[in-house]
Length: 468
Image (cartoon, rainbow, N blue to C red; front, side, top):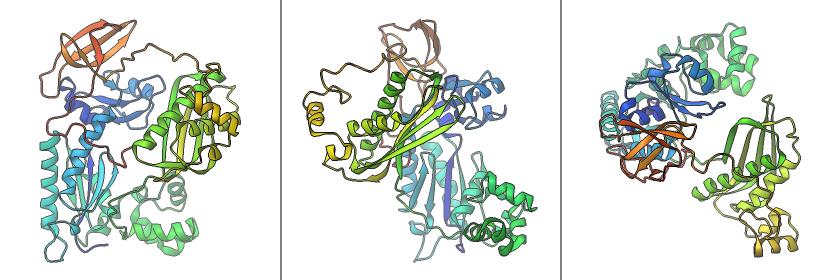
């Protein structure tokens, strides 16, 4: 552990919901929930106004609606979140070259490697506190959003401090106070302590970090094993020497969808797997990567989850190869009882592709030649029957929260839709709360639009490598 609080952890407050409130003037000060808006949707982020009603991340949206029926339930807009994240990460880069993003809204910064360090010495507590105040002010000026900052001598302590500083606060742990700060906290705050470990420790009378220190190394090893027990003994005393690593390499790329109704038609399941495989490869290519192992995830109506994987002969970013591999994996899974969720992923990532496409896929030369020479959009031979079922729903889906524009009224966002109608509120981040109008869902003057940037953010900024 460092002798000075030069590790900074920044966490944007209720990030997705706060961006929505900043982008939509009529929602400021109101409860907002961002996530899946269907019957089986899950809460991604809830504003602090919604949290007062008990709404939390990872909660089913149906439960959230019962707790807070008057909240605005919005579909996420990741393109806008990435723009705001790029602005925030750019400000952090000005503090130090060592910035370790954990997600779109969270990062570690090593202040000892930045311009605030003098003559080879890390900045002291006063300087670190000033840096923490300044970065919060800069982020608020640039985006209008609040951020919480923790400063400590290790990554673990800085992260715990930022959590304790929420919302929109700053907490610095002075050198020498770390163990006293940790001692009364639940043992669950320590990295690596999940529900099973917490239960095992509680059975032994260990409920806090201070209890873990008092139990001693030998007792923790007896309860948890050598590696886990030793690590917990160190962490409970505040010992964490992990460095701030500026680039975190993704281990896999995946996409998944939960369906409003269980899928029982086999051809529809196959079509959804093809679609997910295409989306997965799109993300893979956007990151400039390829992968060697294709993974299929199938969750049944009773929440039973089956995962299957196939390792190819070499890495690929070809959608045909990934779709064929996913289809082979699906062939070995029984879906007759109904499918609640499907997912396709690619792991074993690399930054190159295997040229021998047919060797990877295991196709015969004749079949491959037919597919390449006259294939359809999904790798089918040109004369093959179209096995894809028609895409469900209307051609335009007016999801709540998405951006639209109207030929007469200008930019706005969807408040709700149904029964052939769509309700739009016309406002922008810099306007006053706007007026609401209702249109026919097929109104030719109404069209989807790109999100307007928040004042101070950089439109079109690239996504953080760790934000997907």
